[in-house]
Amino acid sequence: MKMLSPPLLIAAALAVAGTARAVDLKIADFKATSSVSITRGSDGGFAARVKNTRFIPYLTLDEQGVSHFRLVTVATNEELRTDREPADPTALVSVTVDDMAGDKPKRLAAFQDLGADGVVAADRYFATTQPGCCGGADSHHVRLLESGKHLFQSTGPGPVGISAWASFPNARPEQIRWAAFAGIDDEALYKAGVLGTLTYGNETGPLTTLQVVRPKPPAENDDLDLALANGAALLWIDSKEKVPPVDPTLANAGPAAGSPDSPKDIWSLEKVTAPADITGMVLALELDGKRLISIPVEQDKLVPSKATIDPTLVLKPAP
Image (tube, rainbow, N blue to C red; front, side, top):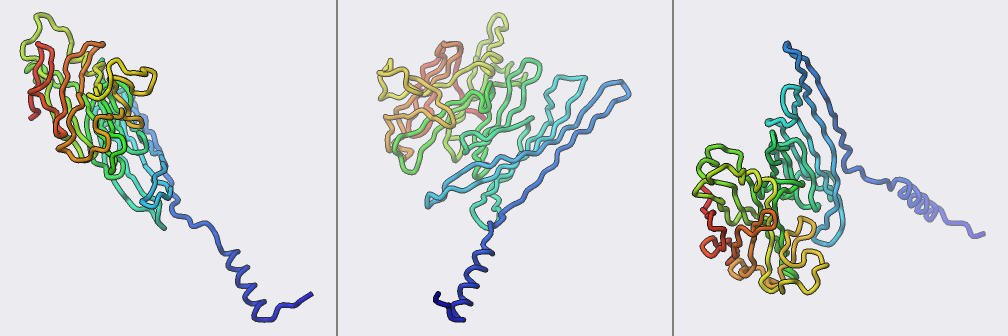
């Protein structure tokens, strides 16, 4: 057997020692607490202050295409009482977002919104929800995860409420557009005929905000404001798409809302990135299958002057 010389023995020993010392680098070791405090008042009613914290890791790609984690920390704080409906109007959701690509966490965003809870949507957005009270609609705040930028407020069912999502195929950089409807819960606005707010924008924020108004009140209250806040639908119409669609079984075929993780492809705007060229798609507002409003998009803005609209309604710029 050939013996190693002392220098080679030393080198081999150092190599083994180095291998033994190669351990995983701990980037973060977060812990959180939750609590509940229950009290009974002099009137016999009960109140429970509930605080919960949870972690939501999700995957993202860096500029080199390497996958790594980001960490969303969600802290909720609400009070439940026996003398009112479960919804706490002061409930608060606090969120932080940290990037885990380096040797230590890097804070990307921190924000708070009124609500009872929230969810990560499509590993791209965070939606906070405040349950409706007394038959009212749920209310939502939707933000961009990586910056905390507030995109829109909406009402209605689901985590992002009444909203519609579109993308322009093969555009670089990626182009996403959204639209959202928020019903009202303000008596003064309702008496002024306002039924809700319609907003259109991209991931930098809103681009157009309009009020949906009924100037002349009906002879009898028809609760149209509640119906829209809870059950309206927003749909994208692509001017290049055949109606009816060639294959209606395809996802988002024909007029469709899309979703945060599956926006409707607008093929008439394939590869388009310049705002001046974003023209041709239409946003529709429907209730129970009835088309109430169709608004064209021109130069990346909603154009209410060219809208087709129910004769009892008008569109006004939001204050």
